[in-house]
Length: 360
Length: 225
Image (cartoon, rainbow over all chains, first blue to last red; front, side, top):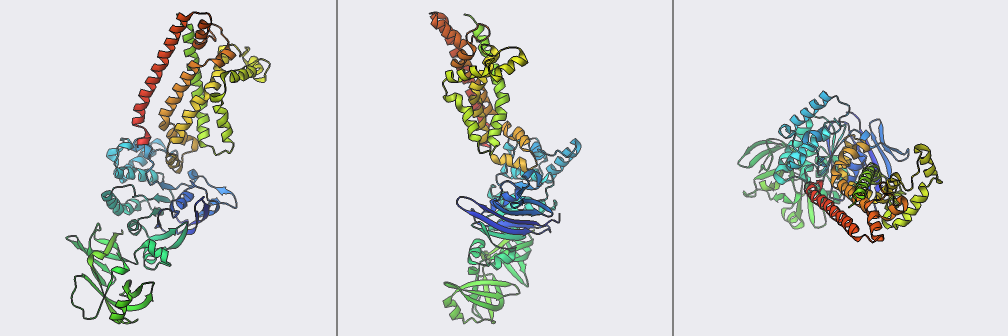
């Protein structure tokens, strides 16, 4: 699969308008469409699927044109060979697990068909449920059936609409960790819609932030989180410092995480040793005077203060600790601590204010 | 009690109900899928028998199937028989008269099937027709059953259209409702009362059976899924 997917669409509703342009790059990657509900994320997904028709614009998949309003071209959803995962699964209630998965495989012979279904049952650990009616399954089981059904025909692109939102909390945490691993073997690009920051951070490689029908910013996860291009983006992502890290040790619910040259002490949360995303809110970073005595904050960092930016009521400090960190302090603190650009500063963060997101 | 009118009524209702299944499912299926802007005209046509006096409907059907009309003369050429005052004519008239009682429950149940299920089937590559047959139809069993029973009961109970199109010919168009009317006209109240009672009890039993079965079907319907 090396086809870039080009999307430039416009669709007007009585009360709102969706107008977006983006390109999904060919390399295997998870792109997250992120934004508050009502931002138009699902509309974009449905237009890509062919379930909704944009008013204007074009959608191209490599050399294929799926939609072109000028040439009056519209490829129906059946012909696009993409997988769509519905928020509430949309399993066929009158069919068994096996028949849901094998619902439409007309190009396969009888033996190929049952082999393919058997393979999906194995991958998604559904073997023992194969002949159960889908109505009798738990939320997590339904989700796996829906994924298996979506992937059984080898789609060229996978669209996931809030794949974890219908699950209870423990199942959601477990599947958030496993989803990328589970789908990794299918090697297809994924476009995922979510309004949940944790999901975006755990599952995404690239982020497209949407608000009120348009795209505010797109880029790699840490770029968008760390350097939001406008106030609204910052509000939506809600966490200024997001850094890739590696959990190196874990004991008693606490973890040691290496970020750049620093080692941070954090709560382990639902993460396991390995790659993680580390999130710290700017307002949770404390500036310490030089030679300050010990405090309860587990993490101390030293860096060079690069920028002082005055915002409405607070002051934003950008500190270079080998990686950039933003901190928000009051004007009074700025004066008291006598902070100047290009000087060395000392930062402290409590272990409980460093948020870890599993990222495999 | 003469049972012939009962046999005739049941035969008519059975034939008409079967015909309405064959006609009504595609028609309701098409109505539930189409985005054609004149669809409302078709819906109005289908619903006409509900509001029209049976005599008006009967009059137009009678005119339409008379050997002088194109329909009647075509039928005469193909089958060598005329339609008015025959069982076949009665079937045709009843099909039209009971059409809304089949199509409307069918349509309502097709439209109540979660659109997402159809969309999921399309995304898996299934055509619109396959989706309708394998996803929409199996989820519409209660609605189909309701439509079947309503059209059966409605055909059993029709009077005005039958009288105009079929007349009162024993063995071929003298159905129960006509026979009862006939008995009352000729002051045979005892016979009329017996027939009425049988029809009343039968209709009640059919409806009770359907409501009982329907409730059980609803208990496991996709709505609760």
